[in-house]
Amino acid sequence: MSFQNLGLSDAVVHGVQSLGYVEPTPIQEQCIPLILEKKDLIGSAQTGTGKTAAFALPILTRLGSRKGPRCLVLEPTRELALQVENAFQYYGRFSEVEIGVFYGGVGYDRQKKLLEFGVDVIIATPGRLLDLQQRGLMDLRSIEILVLDEVDRMLDMGFLPDVRKIVELCPKQRQTLLFSATIPPEIDSLASWVLQNPVVIDIGIRRAAASTVTHAFYPVAAAQKFDLLVQLLEQTHYESVIVFTRTKQAADEISDRLKVLKHSVTVLHSDRNQRERIAALEGFKKGTYEVLVATDIAARGLDIAGVTHVINYDIPLHPEDYVHRIGRTGRAEQAGDAFTLVTAEELKAMLDIERLIDQKVPRVRLKDFPYVYTALFDEAKQTLKPVKGYRTSRGVSYGRQRR
Ligand code: AMP
Image (cartoon, rainbow, N blue to C red):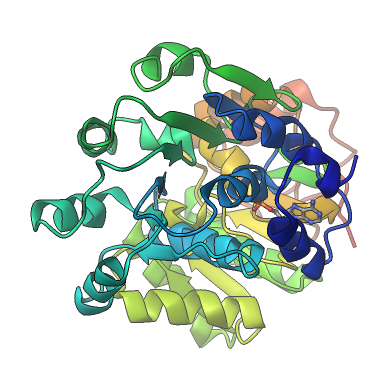
């Protein structure tokens, strides 16, 4: 199957070809014709398999030349909004479609000017979008296509009130598209008010972790987590690594401590101002920094080439977030490693992850790390066959230690 045969406009085909895409990915092949037929859709596929183009290409084809805001794409984070805008701009560079991105943490002037000039596609985070609407600057009554990207996140308790308001500001007669790598079974009832007779496209299972990623759990006592992280960084040949923490404070603290140890590190969380957030992400993408310490704000959707490792310093609270976090590596069929530090208190979260990804993840002990005892070693002993010498505090590897 080629992009030409999917019914896309010549300008859009030219756009993807100029990016070097040769053929559509499975999610693109299935979704593009349905979106062109104006069907409502729930689309899910593994992280990093081209979901953005699956909706951007047919939307750009359908919109043609400028007639006011006709498509709204909602994104959960500013970083993702910027990335999706960037993708639309690239795919649409030979099309006459105006694309604008709207998110908080920055002034209003540029966004106001954009709206005065006129945009066809609005890519936005919910808070700033409602803010602009309440100031009388944004009118959603002409929206024909609504996209909720990372839909399970957009419909969770935190975002739902804002998303409901936004959906109500859009016309009832519209096309609605929902996308995510993790679509929980209850999405059908959660999203029924937003959709009309949707077609469901599932490429692989709805909870799929990228198949190119190797997983490992590292049981450790809470007091030794930082030391183990340092050892892991020292013993691993990585190009770039994202370290996920549960809180902003932990992200700051770990990045400060890694800096002291002369690691090239930057930090991303929602208490940093927008300039700092952009500088952190750009610096990490360019390779100025090898380590990015981040909260779950960086868990979803971000497409950063060459992330060889994801380390979960804190295990994610929701198992779906594990799939998204590790989806930052192993993108576009590249190999990646996902290490997760696990303390005794995190045992349940660990088992929930295994259940969700339907995989037994090897428990690994670092060689030559001076482990103190943690009850988790007993869990590991029951489920795995430790090698001789397992109980010594010097630590013996019973999982595969890569590279
Ligand atoms: P996404 O899942 O939308 O974040 O896309 C993941 C990566 O795959 C991005 O770097 C895209 O540029 C790339 N990509 C998307 N579609 C294709 C395609 N058909 N051929 C090659 N690369 C693609």
